Image 1 (tube, rainbow, N blue to C red):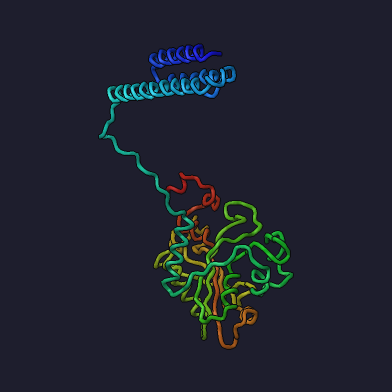
Image 2 (image 1 turned 90 degrees about the vertical axis):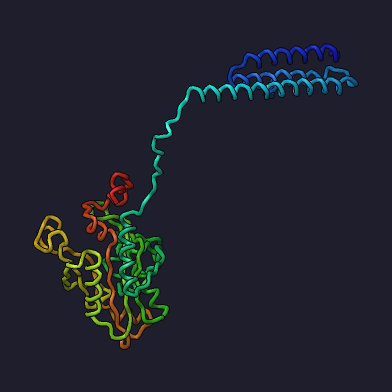
Length: 344
């Protein structure tokens, strides 16, 4: 192929491209022309494939002609693209209107979950009493979750139907009490702490149970701590969280890690203790478990029970949230239904 015929072909391609671009009415139409002429399988590429038929001495000249043709097309294409975009902008400005009096779109911001609201309130109450907030691992050794809390190997709580075992020595903690054992082991006395966190038990999901929930457990260790200190602390807590008219009642109970042990009830804050649907007609609502730390727990954690005494308590965070906000189904806290959560 001679450079003359090659030049004619290039001139034909350029002329065709110029005519097509002049008729283009949109950026998309212009892009189709670019692909047809300049693309990987375009007409200029086909010309370049014919270079093998050009005499070697003519190839530089033909290559220059191809580059000049490409430059002319690209330059004209840029001009026409700018012209089309300007025309489209002017058309939109002439036909579209913006009502500046309309309110702006409101940004939707998230907010705290009811569990988090209840947790922060409990932490505020106990920090105000001089307590420290301490967190511990959710995957815990059996020794800290059970043994150091005076729960023997044959205790029903260690049954696999209640506990998630990773292996024989490691479990998903069933309570946040192991954090208390870890702090007592450090031997830095006195201790005033609460340990909030997520715990796990092999429960079926229903309105009042979940395999994963949250607890807040408290511990005080010092010289001359008595049951009166425990009662005074928890009475103050109940008044802070449920209102100043709240009364408390302690019932004997059994926990392996405390002796004596008790369950604490609060007077119904809906009816003032008269009896209603909320308290099932009893006037009292069970709220938490507590007791004086068992001497054997002190011994296993390296504290002399003859010199130090202490008390411990544990409350379910979800239970506080359910009662405080009068929620009748625990599952609502986990379903992430915005219609429910937006109420808080």
